[in-house]
Length: 292
Length: 303
Image (tube, rainbow over all chains, first blue to last red; front, side, top):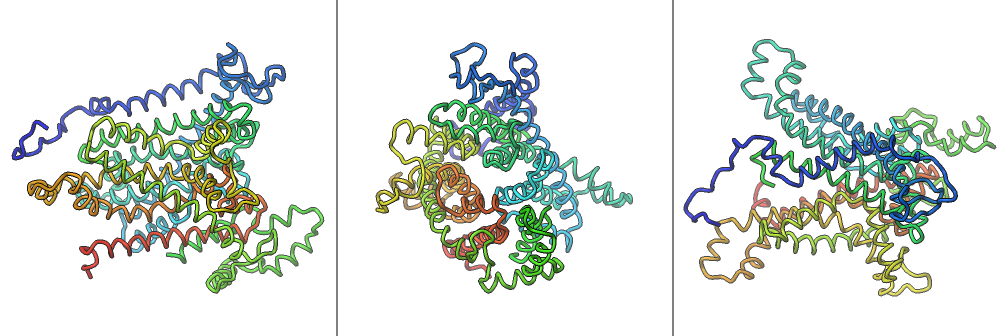
């Protein structure tokens, strides 16, 4: 506290370049690096490993991690390599996270733009619908529908998206309402631009910062949601591995083979934490006024 | 609001492929004629809006239907499982409130200190850990490894004493409370920061009031006030968390009941729990609003 009481608080340096501000947020950098590393590992490493995720080896059942060079993370009750399975599961879980985010962003942006731009009856009705959807604990809804329909991977993506677009819609609606009365939006309307054009060309680009932040946090939540339903047995079905259903099997062997539970859980935590850190850092970088 | 919520819930479940009859349709001994007769008895062959009005009317009068599985009234089944869930949620919230207020306050008065940074990172990680995995870790460490805590259930069969119940409650409520603790401490920190930078705190300091007294008497009351609304917002995530926690700890609550019911395709119970939790969520935010206006005279004076 070198400032004296009377001097005005120093304004934050908003001229600092975006990248610098982002990098100064060490946790966000960590998150970004972890995400890139994890994604690359899941894409590339399976080509290098000597085992596929489905290769059963009954002689190598329950190998303890770090005891054998070729099974660095041990093996499961069927002698399948945990590392290979984690990476293949990562492909599934991460792509579900990204895809669900894209779909839910799409729904959220359309609903939010429409509600915010037109307001009135349409806006109220849409936002009421958003409020109503938020009343259901999302896991309950996802579980009920996935149990009734036993969805495939695209189905699960749609389900997660259908229960996670509401926050985005709220953010976009608030942004749209404040942006549509800005001069440039009004000017575009005066030039005779159609509503669709104003929304897409004038409003959306200016609301992109909070949307990107919401998108990042959305991936984190989608990965979590997938792991929840797969863990409970209603998501991705074995033999396709996902981080969630690997934990489902691991519960049985908790005493004899704890690594089967620890490794996938750690993978989920790492991925979700990274996206949360990244989202937090992006919020700082893109909106210097926000002080949370 | 409740009307919109109920329409959404009803529509989703009835339009899902298979529909309410799928449980019976998968039974090979049933002929199409049996199914049709059954649909007629259950009133499932009428148009959806009619079914909805009928169902909503009966919901209002307390007739929530009969479970497909054990022929018990749905409302009775739900209320008999409610106690365990409320017990779990209440103790988790208690832990979260106490820990959250302490961590948040310490973080605010020692802003940017090592403790504050660790608390920030810790909260972020706590929000990212899958509840079920944390539950498994707790069971592995404290039940399997150290043998301090029971690995599940609400009490030992044949021993329903209070102590035994509390002992069983520790693990699951810690697990369920983790996420809430993170959220509470974050909000408490920012709320406390708002308060301690205000003029009346400076005035109190200038008058020579001791720091602990300022904190407890002047700052705490005003910082906790906005937390009331957080309690209301927390209910959906608490319910979702309870479902998973109950599964891991074989806790006989509403979440377990829900999972069992969806595996049996027990439509009336699934529908009942969905509506019940939505009502809980709505009630929660309503009560939070009311409490807030009672606690904060600035709000209640407004027309």
